[in-house]
Image 1 (tube, rainbow, N blue to C red):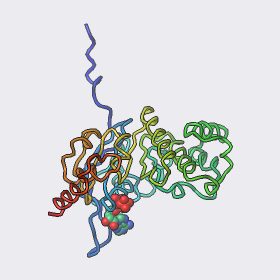
Image 2 (image 1 turned 60 degrees about the vertical axis):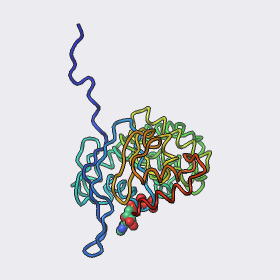
Image 3 (image 1 turned 90 degrees about the vertical axis):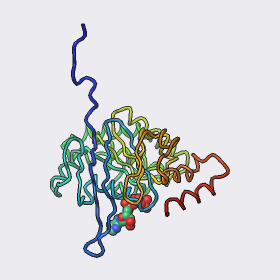
Image 4 (image 1 turned 30 degrees about the vertical axis):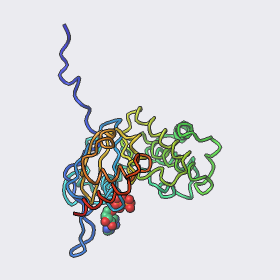
Length: 284
Ligand SMILES: Nc1ncnc2c1ncn2[C@@H]1O[C@H](COP(=O)(O)OP(=O)(O)OP(=O)(O)O)[C@@H](O)[C@H]1O
């Protein structure tokens, strides 16, 4: 007779839960809504692609989850902790624990230009009270994981290639063993060989249970990596679903436009007229 385990098949608690999120910029007459009623979840080990054209609100979503922008309505729960009302001190404590980390498109924004690679990697651990020897050991291990040689440890970000820099930024984001990593166009400034390497490294992270939010304007570059895709259009989520389904059977007109605009997803010769027809439908 089998033992009954009531929660054995229960889905693991999400690493990120965004519910009914509204974000505004500006005050009074200059007040503009950047996000409207955005709801999404990301499970441990899941990769969510957030796709949208420029100005659709992708970075605003990331910045709100990271506590850099305040929500005007709705809630954000990270690793089970409701961070919506967190003040600067609570955010500092959360950042120190390194539960959620981020990588920007431009690695120079994620890395201090005056810190060597080794110092960049060890700093978040030293702040947590980890010994220097242990921090150095973990820095070396992570460098190997992002496929960089140890002799880069003494270099400054300005002495690295763009691809190496971005891999250091990924290693730094991983050093605190985050549960959630947000990447805003991490590969778009890289050449194709470096892009493939970064995407391969991200795929390995998924196997380790790290949840990823991968932000991009290009559905094609995310479709092969993401489990699910969320499509943002003018600050609203217009479609969310498994990546293959969103690409193969897009339901919203805007998603259809994104599919037909992605160079790696485009198939037919009638693309241009199709895109024009879809744009006309959107603006109708
Ligand atoms: N600091 C700010 N102050 C005022 N408006 C802002 C600010 N940041 C963004 N916005 C506006 O909010 C909207 C969403 O911007 P956001 O940067 O989130 O879009 P995005 O999808 O990330 O665009 P991109 O792909 O160009 O980075 C845009 O209309 C933008 O002009």
